[in-house]
Image: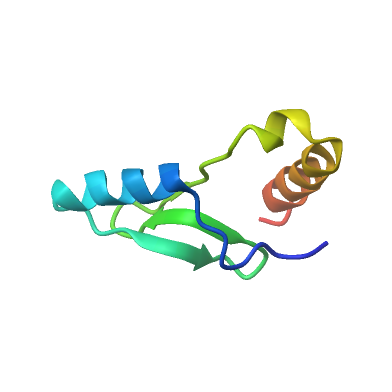
Length: 76
């Protein structure tokens, strides 16, 4: 399975800007070693994924998401 890299969404950028305006440190495209997280709040240790419509309508994307979620939660 390929790791997502360099893919930004408009919504993720809006959220990052809104958080930063409130003084919250945000890292974009944070790597966990297994996958890239859209936004990461290091002080709170929170990962944020911003999914578009393709995550609900594209069968191949749905399968990739399933594998990412399954293996991401079972490697700790």
